Image (cartoon, rainbow, N blue to C red; front, side):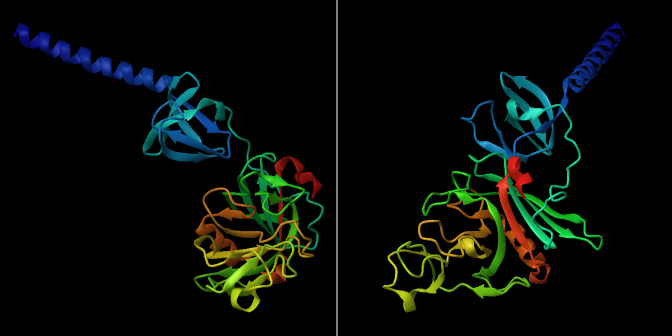
Length: 294
């Protein structure tokens, strides 16, 4: 009987111990928020470990442990390590309407904002807005994407791998799979389609037939590629000034571009279906710090 009592007491002690550990664990768990546009979560506390998932700006995570400058985080059903430099305990303020107060879009009823944190990053945030009956900008879509490998520039050059800042109208929609339902003028891409990027050619920065124009240019970009399954032309350098950049599109992509703006196929299709030429849509591309110029 004594042996049974001792065993029972031992079980109670162990059980209580588990609860103490659980309470201690809960007490040390913190909620933190992502400050970077996109933050890699890795299988260990170093950039040498593989990426488990990616978390986005303002997303909340549970931090259960800290090792040096790395935090162990729980993201949904996944656990991994993220750089503590890009996590904060300060809860983000409610998202502000970035379109409110813009001074150069008085005649526009649809707006795409592509913003980055400074000039030297290929990561961006994409926001779309539409005016309501009261003339107020209403957010439609918010997501992330990518721009040129070396970020934004106000001084474009052919082959510079940077994206142009500025306000531009929306050009022709295109795709290899047929019209996804856009109201924009749509052109289906074929294996014969190229975009001339030879600054010395009279056809510089135009969409052409390879067969009909061969010999009139020394270089041209093949349009029949997966990145262009869907997209639209950003009307940049419409005066076709030599060496100032060509073939600037909004298209599909999951990493930096050579000067275009890219996001997921699902997002590109959503935006194409939403765009309406009757609403005079425009796209503004700029570092967020310079948005007040527009």
